[in-house]
Length: 179
Image (cartoon, rainbow, N blue to C red; front, side, top):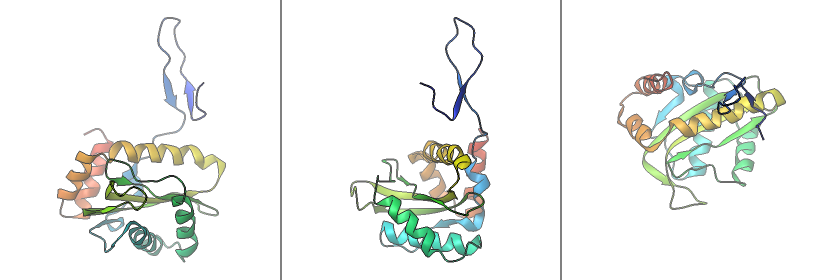
C-alpha cells in the first residue's frame, strides 16, 4: 500500500518501486529565525518549557494569546509521548484559523526528563503549530519526519556547541542543504 503523501514514479518492469514526495520537503530553517532559537530557556520541567516556548513563539510571531494554542499542545501531549530517545521533543498542534506553519526551537544543555518517560532526557524541543486544514496534513507529517531525521544526538550536540542562535540557524540551514 502506498501512503497518500507519496506517489509512484514511472518504473520499468525490472526496476524497484521508487516513492517520491508529492509536496516539496519542509525546511526547518525556513520556519525559524535567530530570535526563535532559545538556548537554555528558563524551565524546570517539560510543561514549563512548552509554556515558555509557546508564549515566546506567540509573542514574536504576533499570534496573540498563547493560551488556546498551548491548550491544544497539552491536549496532544496527553496522548502519545512526543519525546524521542534521541533527546528531541517535538510538541505540536494543528490550529484552526492559522494561516501557515510557525515554530520555535529550545535547546536545553543540561537536559530535562520527560515526565512520561523519565529515562528520556530532552536536550532539544521543537515546538510547532500548523494549520488545521486537510491540505496542510501532508506538510505537517513531512515536518515531523524532517525534524526527527535532522535532530539526531550528534546534531543536537553540535547545536549546543554553537554560542549564538544565528550560528545555530546557519548550522540547520547547511545541514538541510546537504552540506
